[in-house]
Amino acid sequence: MLWRHLVAGGGAGAVSRFCTAPLDRLKVMMQVHGSAADTRIASGFARMIKEGGVRSLWRGNGINVVKIAPESALKFMAYEQIKRLIAGGDGAKALSAADRFVAGSLAGLLAQSAIYPMEVLKTRLALSTTGQYAGILDCAKQILRREGVRAFYKGFVPNMLGVIPYAGIDLAVYETLKNSYLQRYSGTGGGGTDGPSVLVWIACGTVSSTCGLLASYPLALVCTRMQAGATAGTGATAGVTMTGLFKSIVGTEGPTGLYRGLVPNFVKVIPAVSISYVVYERLKTYLGVTSR
View (cartoon, rainbow, N blue to C red):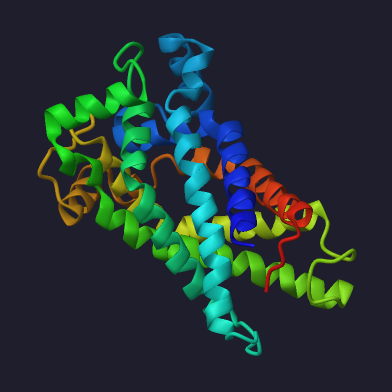
């Protein structure tokens, strides 16, 4: 069952990130460059295409797919296993929304901790210009040579703090809504032949991801700017702290500065969630995975 959770979660994450990569890159550029960046989606895409062609919209997506497969696999697998531990060996305890929040938060922390250096690489590649890096390995070598090993963990603290509400709320709200639908309309209490339709998965996933995103976005923005580090024009310095960056953003850009890039992030929520959860649920059914 473990490897089935890994395959279902990994496949869902990889397909979802590939399809929404252009919006993700635009979000990263808005987060890092702040008020200096054009906040309109259409002109942002046009600028990226002018700089590096249509393929540049997927710049950094290679490492994104490489990291999202193990990240999603670990997150979904850990979530299922932690739920089983909370429910007890015989599964006698009914899981509450709070139990699912705890399981989701712990699963998110585990997954992010395991792949965090790849998050930094994804950010640097997304911000790079044509020809700046020869590939993922070249990017890693340049960061290591110029900034040392510690550079691969810039923004780790705000990232972990942001993962707790995001992963906890996302997974807890999704399963709570899905199970409520099942109990009310199918009477099965689980998937089965009367399980929810694709539209139900999309609706539940969209609501859950939106709730998690709003709760954690400022921390995600600060994390991304710290990851950008010495990248030219980011305004971030090697010694910047999380609290110092919060104060700097609010002081120079106002409270709304903490939500730079939120629009393209919201635009990608529905397709990202639709693809991720639908692929995950389909793979779970195909592989015979059961969930509590």
